Length: 237
Image (tube, rainbow, N blue to C red):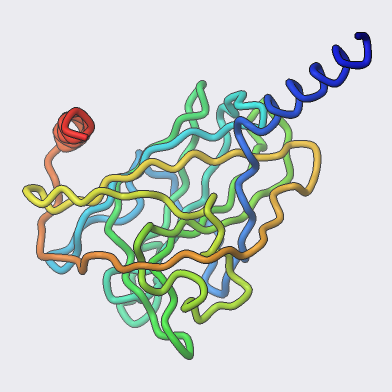
């Protein structure tokens, strides 16, 4: 009987440890630029040739405990697939630093990133480097990339064979709200604060996503409207 109890306890502990599986690491890439400005939930301002993208999420450890006051250094290509400074000469365009709140939550508004040709196309993606100098939770610097569901160029079509676009933990579901021409997605990030369990293995994922459309920069009440739209969409499902 004692053996059964011990086995059940171990099974329960194992199940608990998997409720927030570690998010995979990904490569830094060649376009990182140190010194990005701290902005209030904005990464890249809108242009007439781009769709908006609104991302929310929570940073936790693998036991689902929030990681507050961590710094998220975020950067991605513009709608043409170009990184700043590039030909546009705009330093720190589509680059920003954000901080998680006391519950580990983060959110940002940006544009949907364009693809670029790197001896074959890369899927749309956003780079993250996460550090914890100001956080009470200690962890090693964590670098990864966020991808989007149904992108035709996810692994195995991704031209970057070392990248993790086939890993399920790096691919977020996004919904396109046609009437306000905005993509909305949620992506939680789970860090293993005690080991290297965030290393990734590539898995299959493929599809396609909708091309960007003309739009203008949103008003301040956009986030409220987005959340109402999400609630209504979930009610219909």
